Length: 162
Image 1 (spheres, one colour):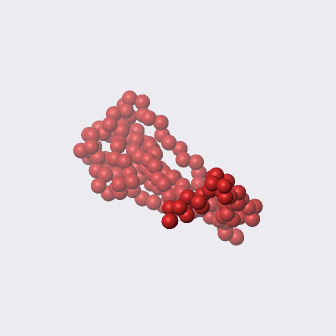
Image 2 (cartoon, one colour):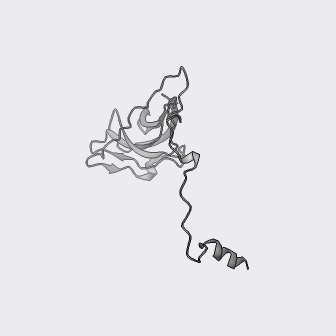
Image 3 (spheres, rainbow, N blue to C red):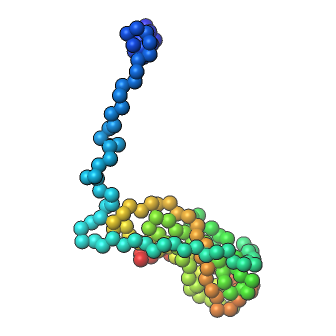
């Protein structure tokens, strides 16, 4: 009985399939000029984050062995790959960027046996627009005072507001 009712519901009075009802958009899918395109606050300037630059691959770079990279302080969001240029003075690491966040790196300290590099994620608060939350790895370079040689690299991460 239920199957018969369902079969008839999809048919016209003469048993032929009925035409679907005409489409009428719901209010939420109707474009409206009255809807805001950004979430700006009165009296708060809109600051756009600067464009993210990415370092090109280092020519003739070599991978720093994993046993010479201490990345224990990094979250899983960060890649642990580190390369060094042929002259040993430029080190390429991966910071994170995305949405209102921009990536960079800084050499914090250099000694005879290690180099401390901070992966910096600068957050530019979205005063006028919505920011996405996805993050992606961005290659960034730092320049050392002396060639890396056999020194160990210690990576840490920090966020700051731009």
